[in-house]
Length: 463
Ligand code: NAD
Image 1 (cartoon, rainbow, N blue to C red):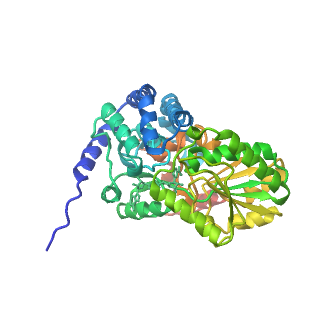
Image 2: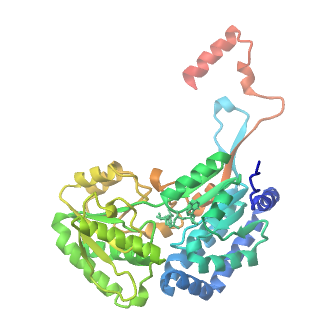
Image 3: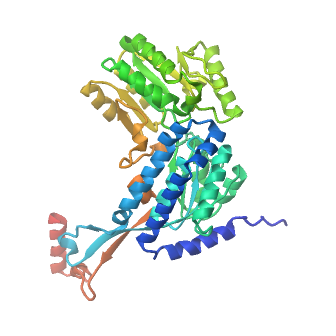
């Protein structure tokens, strides 16, 4: 009988578990020191990071600064200043029935964690969760995406310069590597990626009852209603959709525009695109040929089924922004997450149609509404569900350090960023402290004599 080969990362995990036990008693100052070292490294090696991400995505340096390096430094700064408060015990009320007790919730490190990251914001989405893991006092095995290999290599270098590999290490590799890592009983898995792989991660985690945070994707809708300021909406949609060439988890995936604003909005959007991306160097590449082909296939499927595509400007050597009109539900474009520079635009007359449409589809990661109507705002916020919602802007919320982000059902499980990230990587332990030799509960211990039965009646009636 052939024996199942031993998992190549088993020893690594036992070393991480041993370190995790030691980290539990490390003072918070130790965590802050590590976070400060990360901040220094990122700031001082900015040009190396620019080069690496450029190699992977041809991302302009300024765009990397704004969309990855700044949010990462802000996340680090935020954690450095607040981790002591986050980690402090949180007392809870005791009330009369718990007279004499003192209770609190104490965040303790989860222990050994696994971080699996995507390629689209390869720096931020790999190191952002690591900030939370370090703040929470965990060890971490970091698995960046194989598709953004240059950035993975620089992240690996940073981690090896700053951390003991038995505490934090980077494992690069493809699906086989991730599958092997997923077999192991980590204490927490933090995954960012597609809903399809999210299900694989959750299934694997279930075998060990490992806790998971799943930051997934999906089709985030945008609504421009009949009261919207279309110039403002076009400017913001243009930035949110075509930054990183649409390869953003919270990018507007498709857009509903009110019939009365359609012409004006499309004209503004075209002008905006021409103005923003006059210089091709300000526009990112599609990650690889496979993804570019996937996007072309989505477009040709839509065109074969009657959709009309417009290209407001041609960007040589890049996949240019595309607006697609006359789309229908049977097109793959309206069924799969686009994750590229293609924006289907649907026209509506009554907001009810849009709400019905959204409620018959998986709950998205983000929803954007451009409106000046308080009533429409209220309706969309209360009658639909999405991981996050933004009124009169788009994508901006993702960089807000005080605002947790995360999906709901198909778009994710659990929250990230700032304190929410810290909590995702912590176990919140409830502690009740009682005085020796005393407990009010003794009043209702058996035997149940008539006095105790009366007392229980009072308890049920008044407390
Ligand atoms: P992906 O799910 O294909 O890959 C994510 C990670 O999982 C990678 O590290 C990859 O190596 C690994 N992986 C891939 N296939 C696997 C398998 N069969 N078994 C185990 N591991 C596997 O996602 P992606 O293409 O890298 O990123 C795009 C997706 O991520 C989109 O759906 C996007 O919306 C989502 N995303 C979400 C967020 C968020 O914060 N919610 C952020 C960025 C991207």
